[in-house]
Image: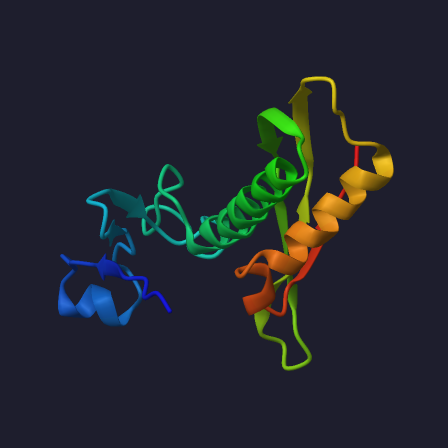
Length: 155
């Protein structure tokens, strides 16, 4: 099977006194094997500014995006195999943070809101669309790797 690598880099500039009091920047970067580097930071809801940067990607957003992206890629592949031609796909994926039975925060639910534009004479029925999303969920290795409840909100 394949292996996936991300290199996470943080460089602290706080004094030792500030660091032990939690007064240090959590901004860091994610570097991927394709050459792109993404600025990252904790979610401002978790760590307030100035120790976070709301303009950067946070792990929670990336988690939600990875589920949505994997679902979309699987969905498009399945649709193509069934003879449907998608021309656009947009999803406003929403993750919800909750506390587990031990009081630890976790992303308990991700709701996908996909909107697909179709071309050609063969258009999926509502039942076929639901089946495609169900099969995409079952085939999405990210969704199958997490205990988060992933829901597809049908339009």
